[in-house]
Image 1 (cartoon, helix red, strand yellow):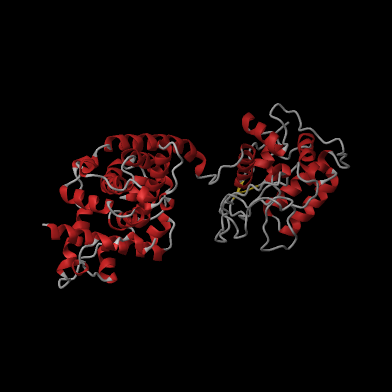
Image 2: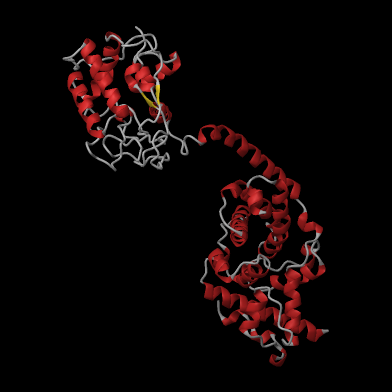
Length: 314
Length: 176
């Protein structure tokens, strides 16, 4: 851009050329009204610029119907897509892979109470039991045990094994972190490893003599409000997801089912104020995509399961 | 209005269109008269698709509308031309079709028509920044981003264009 843009030679008489200040030009460009005392030579330019923003003529409003049709089509299809997304939208703010979503759902049911014990007892409705079978290696709905790893050679079986399993369930529901660690440690030792606990307890539950025939877990009023859950039966093989003894303030999470490394954090109902996500056992996962409930510390937000009271007959 | 349109409110979107389309056409008919109508239609289709995801207020909305229009206009010009068309700012001013004659502008009002004809006689980049400032109502910095020039260069181009318009008006007045 040079001064050659304005061919001076075309202008016959320089004295007729309006000398306009930059400030006036800036005002004109910004659409501001010119000051009352401004030079009359500015008037033609101001009028011309006003013409640029004059009311639209009908010719400039042709084609509205065409654009509105496109608008309707766009938002009709968006609404349709939104409807199917919204169903899960509240539970899962970000779309998760199907497997993770299923695992998250199971984990949610865990923390809502009693699911794990019920699942291990084989007492869930068939579809849910099948889901539990797939996700946490609980017995299949037809009564077939989850495939037990060949390396697992439980030293303790029968009623003794059963009591170890119920002790862990009790500790998990009501015990301190230290109690949970002790109970799970014993159970893992008996089962031949942390990743064999689920299959071990599944077998023990069937073999053991249930103290009562109550089909569903009783609700304990005033529960601890801590999120409960089970360690992954198919986790990394290391019991890395165990609650740390005395680890107050640490996340009380558990390995995600199958230890896939993808976290499946879920809101913990009535959380104790601790972070309640379910971190990956290897800690290499992406951040959880789900909100954790930073609870107010009120206990009893959710009834804790009484794991020992729930085995089904047979 | 904008938020309602983004939620799918057709009446709100209609008002946005009725407010935006005349300005869009005035800009396009001066800087690229051959493709103005098609570029405007393409612009609105593009805007409709992106509307729900748009974030911003009134100024950002107008900036988005005219940024989209400019891109569609360049695309459309490219498609029509056998030779690849360079972006406006790379084209020497003399080679641009920036002088619509009165017949092309017959559907605008007289005041609008003569003003557009006057702006159309300016070098292309001066005409464009003046239209984006006055017709689109964008500030200098937004126009600079839109045409990918420095704010200083845009200001100079606008002022030169206005002075040139004033000269042409003075010449016309001298002839009367």
